Image 1 (cartoon, rainbow, N blue to C red):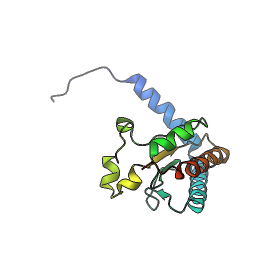
Image 2: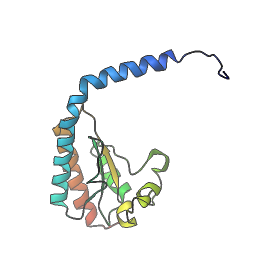
Image 3: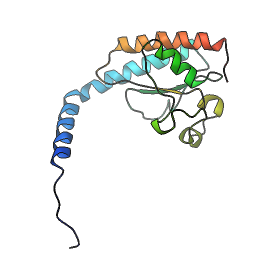
Length: 152
């Protein structure tokens, strides 16, 4: 039939099985994670009216926030957060060192003033509301400090 026999990917299959079993055990925690994310985003937008949540009205992953603050540079925010042992990214892994707005954000109609300021925060069901509170306080400090500099 034109198909060639080969060795099955048993390790891949077993790994996928273990992953799916673990996901099934924890999937009920996704709603709590989503509620924590929404609360975090609400606090940020309340304190910083210029902050933009990318894809805010779209269905999103429960623990991922893509947030921009016009006039601030994402990499400067990233460095400030790292000083608090909080590690975020400014874009996809393949373009994290690029200072320009990513192609994906441009395709979504995101302006450069926001696109260059974006950071992505990703948490898992293993993280609690306290982790979001730590990030909120550090981000609030970073925004306040960097807004005085206006790096873009």
